[in-house]
Length: 151
Image (cartoon, rainbow, N blue to C red; front, side, top):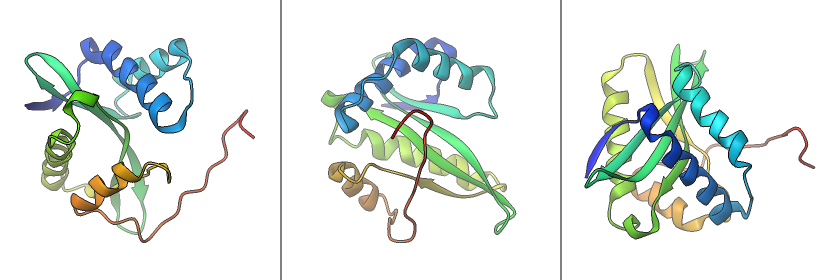
């Protein structure tokens, strides 16, 4: 398994991953055109985020996106892991663990990065277990949201 920064050539597969993830985890049907524009926007503007992928035999097995949060408390950035997807045939094989470790090593070398956070749907208990095994804890914060056009 090879872990690397994603490139624009990976965008179509990342869109497929996001559509599959939304369906699997939240029973939500994403609009492909909107999702495609959203993924392409990240490649066009690094300030919006950064994708990482895992690949084997020149085929993507997983992806995740990092976005940035400024922390005035820490005078640095916190990386938020978002949009995690691992193909079903690669789950429970350490793919996410390897991808997370790759991202964490980059964060550890960057003096501006103070930590890594992520959020997970409360119903996605299998993902929560994976994150706990990776040494993350979900004890401290609860995320609230408001989204235009939703409820």
